[in-house]
Length: 166
Image (tube, rainbow, N blue to C red; front, side, top):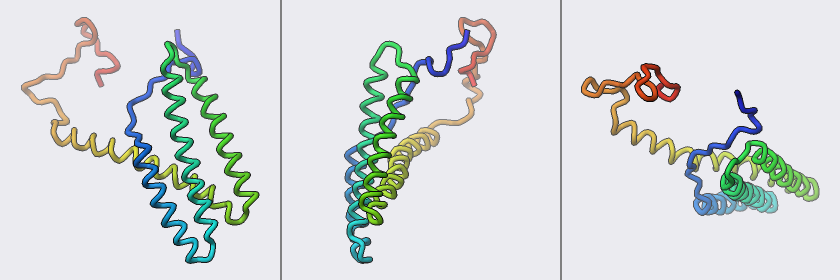
């Protein structure tokens, strides 16, 4: 019997999410954006750009909190995570669009800040994981050696290969 996707349990790998590092990066990028925007005569664009970065950081912190609370249950469901994500993203997007509209044209910096934050989040999360994978790959052979033959037997010596053997 197959479990529908919305009722399947959630499985999250550990992620190298460091909010303090992201905050420092956001402050540095905001300072650079404010200086650049001020030199071009659009100081408030840089300020709103920083607001967008902070909204992105707030979203990331809320994601971490919601994942922790949803997966703490006995049977976390993907449906709960999807509803939480959709509502959180809707609120942040509407807030950013309101700021962009009310304070146009400089308020559009919020949208650019949100977009850049996603790039920063992926980079600061993926790079440490990638480095760890590469460091592990350098220390271990990728192919089993002849001294350690790979077992092709599945569970309990049944002679069958399991899906996890590949």
